[in-house]
Image (tube, rainbow, N blue to C red; front, side, top):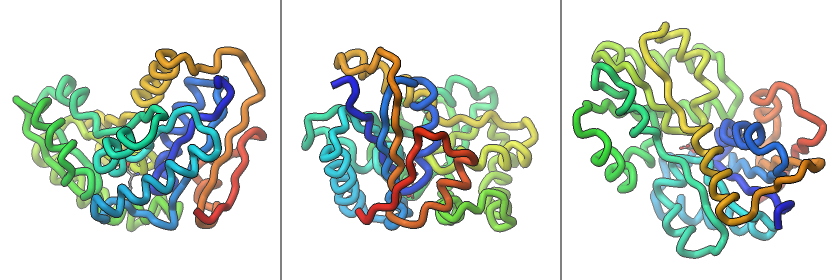
Length: 262
Ligand code: DGL
């Protein structure tokens, strides 16, 4: 059981930001990652469409023997994780915008959230924000257009910069001091956001928290790979693999990039 891989999926390459945290925190674990880039972005789809795509991804990961599944996508988590948990026995870890940590860190009581339309419109997001944002003003912003740019590896393009300025400058103008990245694609833009905001905002993402939660659940379920072993990591994409190469910069020997039509 312990050697069975952890399954991770996202609408595309964004969840690699979570995969990297999991790989670093759990060095004895094997992983299988699915980048469903052919269907990205999920953020503009209906809940019903998102649920159907999540079921497809989950069934592929279960067929490959995954012992636990990380839904490395805020949009998929907020729209589909309850359906997945009700339908499959395997434990699921999800990711949601880190509203609570932001509410504890803000000094201006103004929090900005950059996420997809699907996440910001979801019931789960509404419930979580209601719970944690009692004394805070929240400025929600849909990151329209950012996911396709990241899917195409355009991390440093003028268009990317223009969109970030358009979305973040109004937050700076309203004295937002904590910016929650509510989409797993966005951590790849942190260097550009830092350059723009020049220390005026704390940028909060949930990658490390998800890796820690994954470890806690593996321990609780007695599934943790405790012994050092030669690990393998399989990264599947249903489009071309170029962007994965751009995002990971160097691909270690135990990481295999595979095209698969799923
Ligand atoms: N990476 C995804 C998220 O965390 C979704 C992007 C999308 O497909 O719209 O929300």
